[in-house]
Length: 515
Ligand code: FAD
Image (cartoon, rainbow, N blue to C red; front, side, top):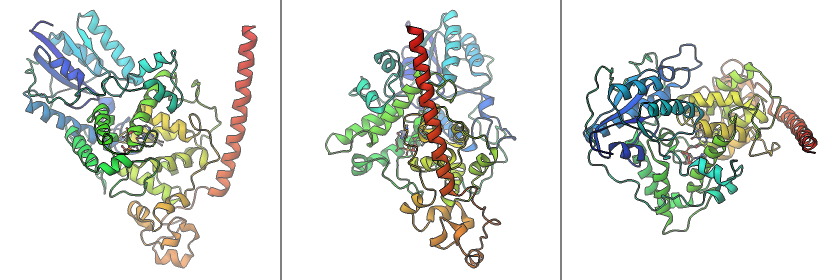
């Protein structure tokens, strides 16, 4: 491209400088570079009717994490002679307006496989192309290009982790230098009549009532993500011997996994760079292998991205060909008790409090509450639990959240519905004293150890002494696990049998049509 070109770098995820091929391309041979982030009010504005502080789409922790990430990106861009231009409005209309107003001839942004971005990007690309603007959308959010894997598999996504790994092989960039330091960026050109904002604060966005007694300890941004990665990598033994699902879900002062998921979600940390760093550690030592290794976790991420992209209606039960059809109940009462940490099972309720306050919980904690809500105890539809996670998690990720809810509810990928997490004994295995419960449910802090997981069994005298009367200070159980789980197993068995019969009927029908 001739010098004199005007480039626009559209940040959505990929909120980073390192390993950012779209940014590199945008800055190459450009006279002016406009780094833009568009604040969509539907994502950011407060929704007073929502069940927790935040907007209609995102809880307050994720909005805050995003704002911190944008501030960090702005200061990194400033160090390189540029800055972040924050605009507000409908993303597609805003970007199209900027292209015209600034005479842009090159538009760069990272490819995104989420349905929301697929339709948004289609619209923007077609308008840009009719205006003669070149677009460049590299794949750098995932290790592999999910479309290429689907193509390699004859047009359908691989449905098991092992078949995914076989198809994926090694990434093409495995030994390329991904983290090449950038020393400067082209200047930002004249912004004309476009209204540019600084990165807003929560208060400026209208989230002024946000007062929680405890907030997420995780700060957003590329600098924090890289610092966290460095800390993780400094313990080479830990990285080399990482095995999931080993690890203590109740460890909250020092979580048992990396807590890099929020940074990967927003692209503050490149998954490809993370992969290379793990491989560097592996070079000289004996190490664990996928699916349980740390590198294996990143492959799980890519696996779900691939299946999600290649499966119509992946986020629904109906019309989703890989999802078992199960007659879940529609009980809002049970859903709300679960969501509001009022099930009467301290292990489950403490996890739901951590989720609300921190926006992050350990993988096995996610297993426990997802199983409890769906096939384990309450038999509530997985889509409803998915919605709660989608809103509250900082790392909320369309493909990973839906994929894991499908898994945990035994709707897809995993079918051993007889294996149910006990809301009593599972947590006790890791934390017999109940320290995790005492921290997140202070109402139970004085309950003796022998009753902390089952406070309804404590004699009234013990409850009185612990200043926690069950049914008054802490709720009674919404269900009795023994009978509820038995009931769930029976309903799952019936639903599976019906799915089998329906599958048979469909196949017979298909065959008849073929004959
Ligand atoms: P680590 O164990 O340190 O793993 C490193 C990275 O590997 C993670 O950051 C993540 O990107 C990836 N990874 C790890 N486990 C998985 C997995 N099972 N599936 C896909 N990728 C994985 N993860 C999200 O990032 N966003 C979600 O919205 C999300 N929703 C979930 C919902 C349910 C019901 C369950 C059971 C799991 C969900 N997970 C989700 C997957 C997993 O729990 C988190 O990625 C992990 O706990 C994040 O913590 P970490 O970064 O310390 O993970």
